[in-house]
Length: 213
Ligand code: G3P
Image (cartoon, rainbow, N blue to C red; front, top):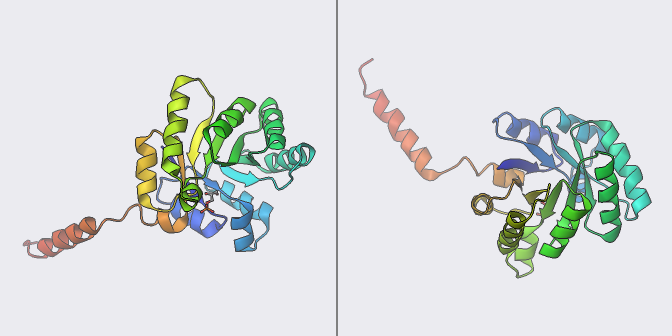
């Protein structure tokens, strides 16, 4: 399973990339606004650290998405154009696939949406599980449905589990065979941690002090 960082903070990307486990980054307009930095510079900095950086179009019509997406794709070969799950977005996905521009479809909340995006030519689809949980639904159940459907067909489209809230989401997504998980920085930092690792290491080091050297 690939692990992405869900952030627009370059320092966070640089830090986690050093661990050797980071496969990509997903940004969105809200994350970019939170950092308050130049969007193009941010994306280009991130492209130095990882081979896949999602940059979201903000146009809502096909012509606007096409223009923005083509521009983003021209910045760097690591850029993946993020397109919202709308009918205009579907047209854009088809266009970008025909041009060899990689895409990630965002704001997926149902299996029919996932199927449409894959059929239109998305390279990646992003179901938002945390927001479904927040709305009283079962986000991980949607990942189960999508992965089951994906087993029946030959979609050339990776399933990226987005809107993750805690480490258990990453474990459950892996057990369902999801291709990618995007993880917020604070959750990513929890992934290497376990209290028994800490106490175990403390004891090993204390015992090592008793060894004659
Ligand atoms: O980047 C898309 C997605 O991961 C957003 O997550 O926490 O805003 O629901 P969240």
